[in-house]
Image 1: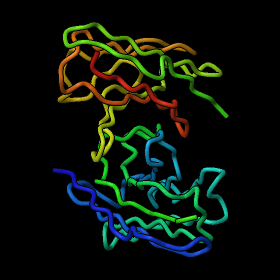
Image 2 (image 1 turned 90 degrees about the horizontal axis):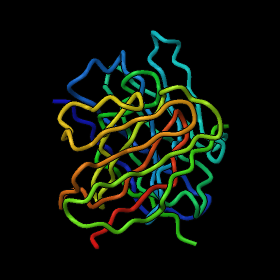
Image 3 (image 1 turned 180 degrees about the horizontal axis):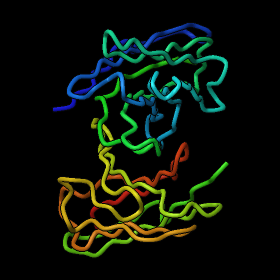
Image 4 (image 1 turned 90 degrees about the vertical axis):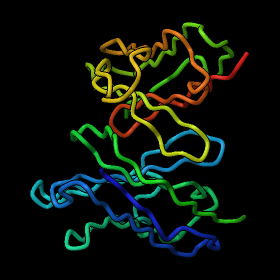
Length: 121
Length: 103
């Protein structure tokens, strides 16, 4: 069974930083392309970014609203993908999900349970 | 960037109803479209990918169709557990969602 377990969410002041972790089991992590997607409370889904496997070049992409502030990385020895969030804004308040890009088309069947990041105004 | 427009944003339906949700892309995307179901407090659930391929384990009352710029998600006979929000996705873009509520 594939499992993705996120951690690291919480309350952080505007301008602060937070690092989310997502530990994966049940699939060959080193071959996995991983994504972060967020959902603002009461609103829709927003793609945050993606990191390819090292074998595929390790390319990292970001959505425009987070480019330059968020950093995605991976540690294949720990089966973990990270989302370092810096210069946080109130509009970054959301539930953050990690998920597995199952076919390189950004489509994800396996998702974590989500972790809430709250940046108060 | 591709924009996805879903309609309706909200619909009220009864158990047993046939429900259709539309997703329109701002440019042609072949069949690179997925549909997800979202329920409060739960992770998104992939229903359909490749516009019409039913994800394993998803009930057959769900179906997807379309190509190019217009796509539909159909629930042939709405069940109580289907009251949720539905989102289309193409690459980095998501539609704004359709909330299906009980009439």
